[in-house]
Amino acid sequence: MKTPLFIICISSCVFSIPLQAQVADSTTILFNMDTVAKNLGYPWEITYGPDDSLWITEARGYRVLRISSARSTSDKNDPPQEVLNIPLGTGEINFDRTSNRWPQGGMQGLVIHPEFMTDVNKRWVYLSYVYKKQTCPSSNNPCYFRTKIVRCRFYFAADPGNPTSVPKRDTLTIMDTVLSNLPGSNDHNSGRLTISPVTEGPDNKFRLYYTIGDMGAGQFNNASRTNYAQTLDTCEGKILRLNTEPDGDPSYGVNHDYNTWRLWIPNDNPFNHSVPEFSSLKTPVYSFGHRNAQGVVWGYANSTWRLYSSEHGDKSDDEVNNILSGGNYGWPKVAGMGSDNNYSSLDAFANNDRLASLLVNYNESTWATTNSMRRPLFATFNWPASAIPADGSNIFTWGTIAPSSIDFYKGNIPGWKNSLLVTSLKYGMYRLKLKSTGDFVDSSSSTNSVDTFPLLHGWRVRDVAIHPEANSGTFWIVIDSTGSTSGPTGGFNGSNDPTPDGGKVLKLSYKALITLPINPNPPGGPPVVKDLVQIYPNPVISTLHIQGKKELRKPLLVQIYDIYGRMLKEETSYKNNFSVEVGSFTPGSYILKLYNGYDLEVQIEKFIKK
Image 1 (cartoon, rainbow, N blue to C red):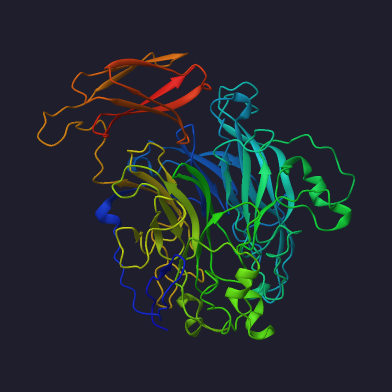
Image 2 (spheres, rainbow, N blue to C red):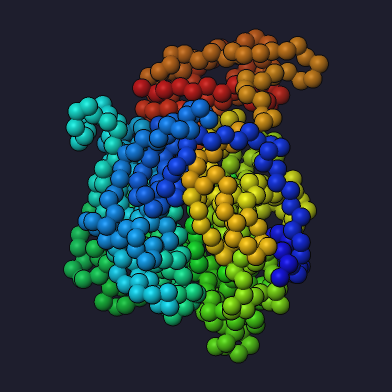
């Protein structure tokens, strides 16, 4: 099979047969790239924390690491700070690196509570990891593991109650279990975590979202494993919605996981258990019909928060989805858009519920319509049925990018605002420009390189973190140590190429972005340089005073954001000197942005609310 053209699809596609790929890697044109850490053990997650540190999980090292966001290439040989290390082969982790089969992932997702820096009692970090091997006898049989989500407490060295010995050090301790006994596998565990950007539900608390895959049911050594992605009473092939702190619900009095987990399951989740005995129990399921969603992120566009996910396709049709409460996303009955019917007739492999071999005249589109399936807002390699390979084909030629994570970019790189960054185990990282509505990708073919193009060809990118300041133009990515996948590293030529920079953290800095403050005048006007605005006092208790230079074009617009990018206040002034009340803000770090009368962002200042 020849290598394929990168075909993307929004709501419908003209089918394309596999062609020679013609995509240019723009990485070195747009970015400076530096190594800031190395020798990591299969890094899986990288998250920019509210403490201005980068938090990293090691899938096979079962460690949580921190590095400063100020690291440069001169620091690359310095080992990261280890804040948690769970021993392998002893205690609750009953396997180690000598095991005949390793779970997909291992130590997986990490997310930090939004009030981590503003409430010393909520320095909470949530982790997911595979903790128990049950049975995994041979390459021809399914592998059964167990997975859990835990809530941890982080202590800075000087925090009261720090459990470490003198001299005290920063440390992360497992505080309690959110869910245990979740299904696990050597394939399709998913495992990403995110927290809602705003409080939700009648208790006005933040919610925790977790992706869990279909366990590889129907493929490779898990070919005989039942696929439960369409079964609402199980957690496999779902996105779960959980409490970030226990809600106090009493025991229901039945021996069932959903009762054990009841403190962590929101009472406004969309589904109840279908078995009459348990019908009063809410399930943790938020959406279903997912294959292997390894990416999940909140993004704010068109004045609306949306939950986006990236999901591995079968032999084509990787997906980006807008996740809605109670939504059915099709798998294993539908792959990709569904309206193309490309998996209705020629899927000879065990995936997709063996539809071709078991059903007569099956039609993806009919099923999708009948079952109110939520179609992806974007799909890659939308191959026709004639191009879908049969069982026994070379997996390294399949039309997939193997999307490993997703993040939302809202910064100031020209043309990039409101883009999704989708990392790939096969082809680096893709930038997908959203339309202003936020619910479609603003591209319809691979020739539209302005809106949708790949970076870091050949790198096996596991995750990306974005600097929260809009004008930084800085990303950090973690590279898998080694590995192969049916979305192979390096391309689609049938080979399994090693990844460059395995086990490293790479820093990408956009070359052309001008660091603010910038010239706030239109062309031809006199140059104006730094310190257009002074703010005081900083730290502030209640009233923040803003003193601007007289040459600033009026009116002036001030916006104040929290560290997660949520705009909290917006005020306009026709005066150079004015004040903004922030007394009602929770103590913590905030960002002030100033716009002049030409609607140019002229200065960004960070301040502390005491």
